[in-house]
Image 1 (cartoon, rainbow, N blue to C red):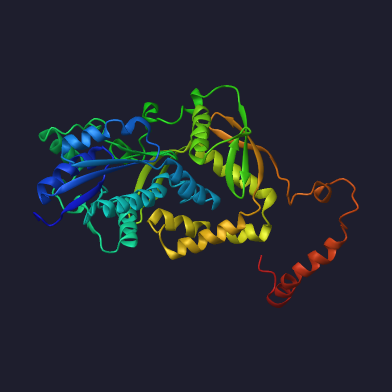
Image 2 (image 1 turned 90 degrees about the horizontal axis):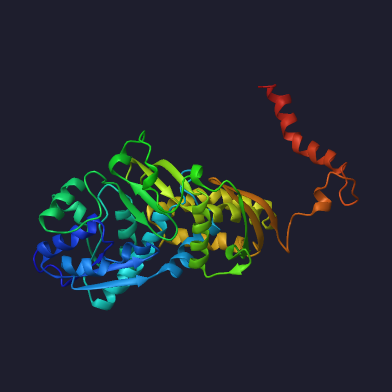
Length: 403
């Protein structure tokens, strides 16, 4: 394995897995290891990354600020599609992987590296997401997946390896669950959380307070939309990343966006994950609300029928696929007129829509009113109902009443 590579670019987070991987790659391949960290909103988690990577054996460290690109080109397109996986997971981890892989491949080309590596386990989804992206963006690149090659078969073994080699890691045997944070969410999994009956302690959460500890007074906010994308909060126009950060702050203050789920991994097993997605939860509700007054019924029906398929593409790692692009173009075309303002009330874990308005609204009060009007002839409904009942009557007359 020595001299098999000239340079390897590692997707480096500074966590347990990638901290060990730098040392392991150096031992196995005796080549230059370049650490790459994508700043997609981890906050102060990135502060020690450069020094730590260099101390562990990296020859160079890239820390790229991708927050705006992440929000604008990955999170917002996913939100325009109202995507969620298995009922309520907004896919905060899934959506960051294609961007990280894209930048990693760019750096590999810049550095003339012939290999890329990641810290994903052989049991998880991320290995698939990273490697599908690598292979699409650079079909010739060589991929090293240490978790599938080494004899360090558990997180406990990694902790012991790190201690033996003097590598500081942010987990202990007493608190071994792993986290993944970006501007859209933070995830917690592994360790004590592998027992789906175990209730996580409140001090585990980072982006939000518990609903019980949230303010006793509700807070009302307004979000402006243009062509399906949020552009302002309470009348203040913000960049995509700043807007999401603002809503994370507001939602987190009111205990919004916590979920605890058991999900189906692409590789076949189920896993338990706990997530915080405060801003994303607000935006998901607000987007649905503005669509309700601006999107045609049949367009919405067709779009909604495709959401599960689109979400599975993202969750399983097929962001850079022709089928995802096809659906994205379809969804985005449906968003052309999704423009207006949504008012929401935030209170103790709840995000409630209390108002929506649009200059070009399909909601016409005079048409929907229960009061007397001269724009809708109620007796037209007689023929409408009879025609819709025709096939039901014929079925019943032919085969009898089966109910």
